Image (cartoon, rainbow over all chains, first blue to last red; front, side):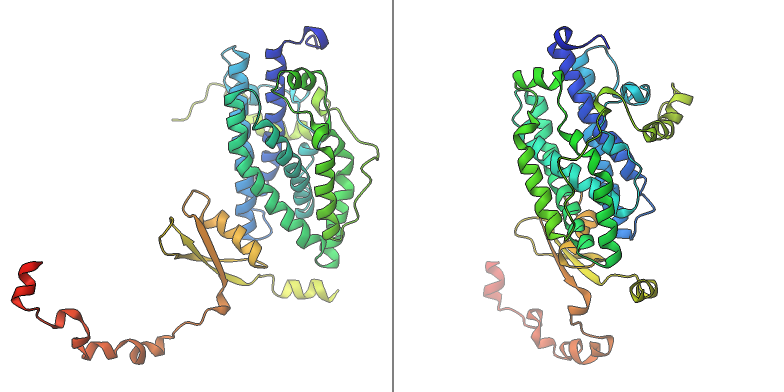
Amino acid sequence: MSTKTKTLTKQEAFFEYLVRLADDRLILGHRLSEWCGHGPILEEDIALANVALDNIGHAASLYEYAAEVEGEDRHRDDIVYFRNDPEYKNLKMVELPKGDFGFTIARQFLFSAFSFFLYQGLAKADDEQFSGMAEKHLKEIKYHLRHSREWVLRLGDGTDESHQRMQDAFDGIWTFTGELFYMDEVDELLIDEGLGIDTSVFREDWKNLVTDVLEEATVTVPDFDQYMAEGGRKGLHTEHLGHLLAEMQHLRRSYPDAVWE
Amino acid sequence: MSNSKESNYDTQWPLWEVFTQPRDGKPHEHAGSLHAPDAEKALENARDVYARRKEAVNIWVVQTEDITASTPEDQGPFFDPANDKPYRYPKFYNPPRAVKKRS
């Protein structure tokens, strides 16, 4: 990596920032799409597919803008289909296998709660196109938060089995929650430019929201100060991302010149 | 233990009827039905199934079993009487010529 510390320009940092945001949403959207046709009930199958499409849509706008900022005439599909896993900068949380319905809901709730605070800040970013995008996506994020929150409450405070599954889901994913608030020189540079958000500002709000919902759902809140896994933002991923990308990129890489007819 | 057996027996949630308002000032219309465990989830499901592409500005959900409907057997006593009382329709009467001219 040659683009570090002093050599990082505003343009490079903004491109990286947009790609990180987009990678989170694309990979999560792909995981959610795996539920299509496998949802626990028809209505929820449709709901999860909708959330998947929203996330992939958010990612598409972000990649498109990233390509524009980069200015090297790349199409967003080039960024999506022709990068390998070390070049993907998503959080480890979103690449984990979809697990059972409880795990998918626990992850969605934690991620949507984080996005809810993040996008309120991004909607005021000092860049009209970026802030407009964030404001538009925030509406859908609010719905994802509502949808997943209501499920956490019902499953956590449901039957013995659903309660245990929610507890296991939160215990299992907890070590990946610290990375939500990871920041490095990319963030620092953009915070100074009024384009990035200092996530430590809303960390307490996020903790309070998560704590309130888990307590209401009778789920024991794991330790926020436990060991946290990181690395996603530097391209160090779990074994699961490579398999996901293999499936997602296979067709495009096999037929790179294919077009919709 | 009994829980899992019961859920194998019947996994369906209650049925809800969905009414969507296409735009402000318009009456709600029946959009369809769906399954949901409770009212909040019924609203969310209704949004995802019937109102995701701006089809509605407002949604009502009501549990199907709470709707009291007339039955096919009611058809005669409820709706037929009007047939042999044509004078109940405004068209039964010929308006005076003076009124016709005005309109």
